[in-house]
Amino acid sequence: MRKRMIAGNWKMNKTYAEAVTLAQDLSVALKENPADSVDVVVCPPMVDLKGVAGVREFDNAPFEVGAQNVYWEASGAYTGETSCDMLTAVGATYCIIGHSERRGYFGETDEDINKKAKALMAAGIVPISCCGEPLEVREAGTHVEFVVDQIKKDTEGLEITDPSKYVIAYEPIWAIGTGKTATAEDAQEVCGAIRKTLVEIFGQETADGIRVLYGGSAKPENVAGFLDKEDVDGARVGGASLVADSFNAMIQKAAE
Ligand code: PEP
Picture 1 (tube, rainbow, N blue to C red):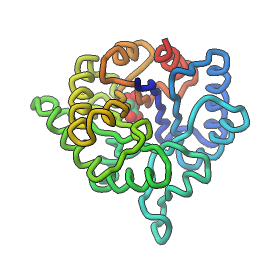
Picture 2 (picture 1 turned 90 degrees about the horizontal axis):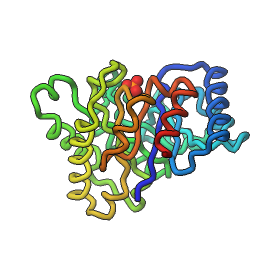
Picture 3 (picture 1 turned 180 degrees about the vertical axis):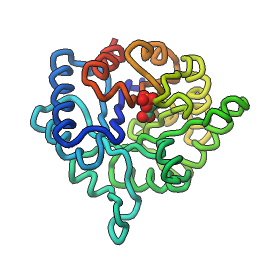
Picture 4 (picture 1 turned 180 degrees about the horizontal axis):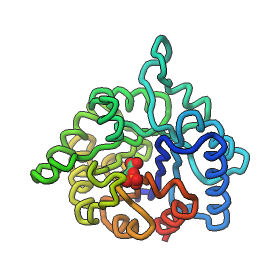
């Protein structure tokens, strides 16, 4: 039985003080309405990680903290980059990799994503590995093949001993931050194909334990429809995670 997950990606939003306030608001909301059946993760900007992890620790807040990026080398002359150990030292236990904005704006490749996943897993940080097709691929009707190919490349050579410690997020690019959502059926079609691919790669037992999230303009009003689907185990949330009330509303739906 896979535990549902709601993971917020704050992207390049929230200064340090704003991030701490949002984390505190979320902590209060979750203590008023505990959602123990759901894993909650928030992924603030790198410079806010320590502050948000501090709220988590001080308040014993029921959420985990994740980064939005990592570099696979352990240390050295990699200006601007952040290692796994650095993330661990500031309290991050999850890390998003392969977000379409990083693939698109910063040229991140499937090979990079694969190296990042391996480095994170070796360091005990849970990757939330993103995949998803652009609009032209969806319109050409080859979206399933496109995403399956990404999954094969991104997971190449991974050794998954605990499937709850590797998470995939299917995020069709045309639905991210656009207000256009995929239908729940669209999400199931691709998430189901991802699961089948995971069975081929890792075997049934491991594939059954890996969570596959949907992301792309998910919000309190539509999240339940996605969560009802067999192979959708939660949501990756951008815009709606920037306000404690809307993010908490999604968590509460997932806990129902
Ligand atoms: C995202 O950040 O990956 C995302 C899904 O954003 P939004 O929910 O705003 O579409």
